[in-house]
Image (tube, rainbow, N blue to C red; front, side, top):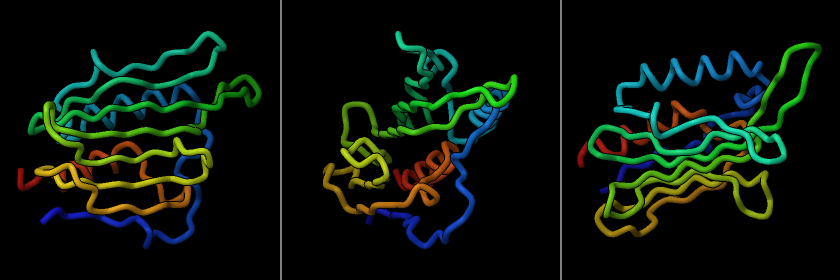
Length: 157
């Protein structure tokens, strides 16, 4: 049986994806991934970059325990508040799978309505979707919560 963790019970709270200074965001990102027990490596496979229009994004893969791969794509709004560059993510894609196998987990808001945050879990043996919910922005997990859930989902693999 595939374990799934609903986030629908999370009551309204301050948006955990709010504006943050760019420097602080990068430092927190690096520290939290470096310290997460499920993460094996990410430094050579996941990076911040800018596109031709100057928009900031984070893209690549995180290599995790049990050979799990997590593909990440996050796109950010950015603006200056005084002299401080601040960022806030507006588009999220997290897709986890075992190489050569079926997907395990997806979180994203890449539908026509960017305010629809989807959470999907798949049976690792068959690839069949076993759980799906649509979340509010405040219910959508931060990066380390995605890793925590993925670690829990793969305990029995």
